[in-house]
Image (cartoon, rainbow, N blue to C red; front, side, top):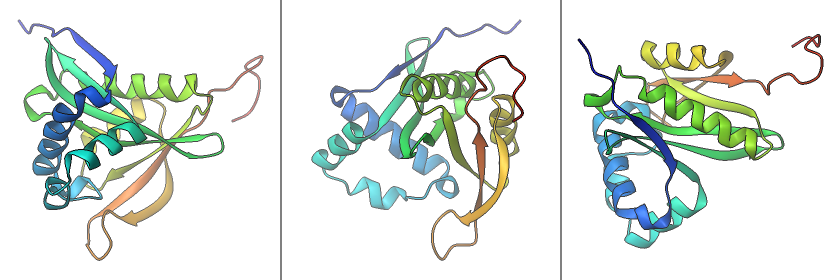
Length: 172
């Protein structure tokens, strides 16, 4: 019988800088094709660069049984739209709903900030992520771009429109 892990998601602060660095570098090492940056680039960041990065974005930390196991960040993309970036769950924590907790927390954060339309990019060949995002209301937009300039791996945009308001009779 599988046991469920208590999962919590909280915003990270600059006091979490060392933990953020550790998890972000783990993410880049674990899934180098999935991010626009590289392990080598970010491993060279100074402590000040890590603090600035953490202060500049709303980064969420997932913990299961008190153990840090996932990250996601929400950044403004333009009027009325946020972007969900840097989503990652540790390999030993995958398949346990932690990604769903992170996505829900990110959507709640975007909505609380008044920018409930959220876009993200999902790397090709990641059907588990595609299913996760689809379950949370995201749909492919048709936009495609390289993950990193000059490299063949592509990523696809997905958008979750702002929830409809009013009587519920509006068209989407």
